[in-house]
Image (tube, rainbow, N blue to C red; front, side):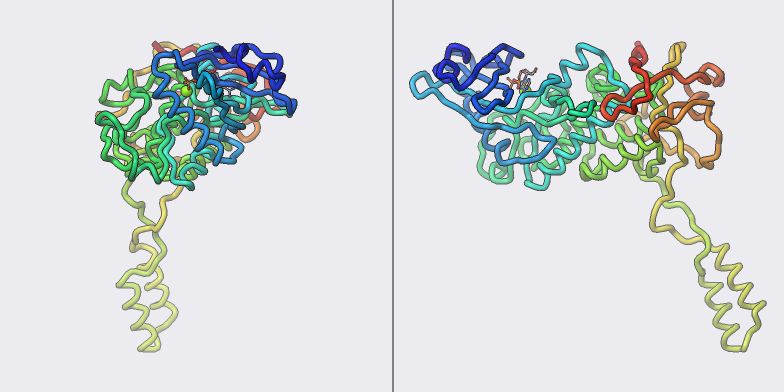
Length: 432
Ligand SMILES: Nc1ncnc2c1ncn2[C@@H]1O[C@H](COP(=O)(O)OP(=O)(O)O)[C@@H](O)[C@H]1O
Ligand SMILES: [Mg+2]
């Protein structure tokens, strides 16, 4: 019996019930519960095809989500079952801004800063799941729900832990089929092998694809055809190259080459939002460690020892210093990539952008050569720490040299953390 006609709904525990979505074995409703909360109620009706499988899914979803108490994970209030009919009702917090999938379908690609903010929210959720050794296995736009914040903007939360795998299940659950359950369009390569022990990097992969979809409205895998990943800038010319590099790193086929933690992924995304440079590792295959000068090499050490032993003069020591300066050693860390504007929020009426496809096998693009941050970008604006302009490199890449095309920044408003002074703008039309 549908939820509005169920004994639970009729008992007066729920009011103002109306349908908001369609699940696989029943509808999803919004309702007011008897504690004054607006909740979402997912029903699973025994007559529905696949009910048996969904029964387990519901119980799984309820058990795992109830144990997760995190601001970026949809809260489950309770799971109800009608003892007579066997109907199941999963009651959880209501997402008043709907799912991310609905949002993309309705409005098309998101403004870049908003897409990045959603991804940062979901990274926080994955940080929590990873800490509890849970792999979600089905991160995708329809499992990300959006909530309006009191002060404006949106919070994204991860939902639907129906096929998540926890540490206990890793050893005990018999999985049917040869692959992990999931949605093929978003599954990491290692998910195709049921014997692979998954970890959070599979979810990072799916989140990378989700971010790409938020920015382009397109399915990444459908465009990649198993080969080179599509170029973000070909579809989203207003996005700076660094954003494409970050996504490319998240979706590397080899999980050892991806971001290893949601924290690392989020850290680069935050740098993008702040208009800061990202580490070049994020821009592609790990580059050779750059040379750093200023440490003493063997010649310098010997020279200095001689100076000390033979009462050498300052001049000798100075020579040692010079040798030391000139002799390079490997640096421990990579210097930051130049401060290329990341979210170049101009939306130019582009001619056909160059098909800057990534190399086969989705290797990382090469880090751009170092340019001092003072390399003046095409005139634009910086709003709330976000660069809203294109660097000369970006502009040249996109225009084939006619950077003037991009010299006028267009209005843009990241709605997740909306700077009040910004005007609303829609993302540019996707490339073909
Ligand atoms: N908590 C919720 N708040 C608001 N809408 C929801 C909620 N849960 C689901 N929905 C809506 O119902 C639709 C179907 O629910 P979903 O959880 O995807 O079903 P299934 O588990 O069968 O995939 C979603 O796309 C979304 O629009
Ligand atoms: Mg779902």
